[in-house]
Structures are given as C-alpha cells and as structure tokens.
Image (cartoon, rainbow, N blue to C red; front, top):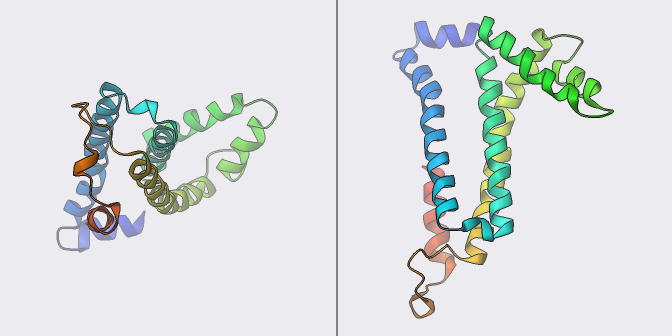
Length: 172
C-alpha cells in the first residue's frame, strides 16, 4: 500500500495513473459486455471453442478485477474478500481447504493481500495467453458474418494481414 501512496502523492500525476487504472477496469467491462451482447445477437455462441474460451476470458477478467478491488485493503475490500472467498466453501469436499489456500491461513489477513497482489499481477499474463487462443480459434472458424453473404471470393489470408493487425492491437 505504501507504494501506491507514494505513486499518488509523490509521482507527477500519479493520482491520475491510479484513477485511470481503477476506472479503466470499469470501461473495459463495458466493452466486454458490448462484445458479449454482439456475440449473442449474431449467434457467435454456435462456434463452441471460440465461445468457451471467451467465457473463460470473462471469468479470468472478473477474477483479476476482484483481486484488484481487494488491494486498497479498506473495510469494503476486506469484507468483500471475506464474503466472496467464503462462497468457495460451498464446493463439495474441497471447499474449506480451497478457501484456506486462497486466504493463506484461517482468515483474511496480510497473507491474503499478498496472494491477491500476486494474482492481480499474474492473471493478465494468463488472460493474454487465453486471448491469443481466442483469436486463433476465431480466425480458424472465421468471424461471424451478420449479412449472411458468402464472401469466399473476397477472403485474404490470415497471415500476414490479420496477424500483424492483431499483434499491433495487442501491443497498443
């Protein structure tokens, strides 16, 4: 927490960086929900592999946002972590052990905060890998065509045209 306080107080426009990080997550979720809505409208769920990887991506992004929400370590964060992680105790046979593993002990404590910070750092790399898989499956099946017109004559190869475009978008 002291590093975040240092960024907010001592770094030029550090408060803006922190605010953009926190509010950017909300904007990111707006974009994700619009993407899911478009997929539902155009029937993209018919491409099972692409859709299932997208659902896994949604869950990973939600987990990343949740552990990031806990990091300020206020009362809302503490009780949010306690309530949400306790939901895992409903998993048959292993729920209690799973909750204790996530907590790093028998209650939400500093070990939990350390684990959540590590998860918040590591999950984006898992998300990046899953995004690459999502794009590979998308380019394998082809994008959903809302007009329903057969465009085989107009197709161009995935590599190098779209792969460079995706790489540039990912780097940006």
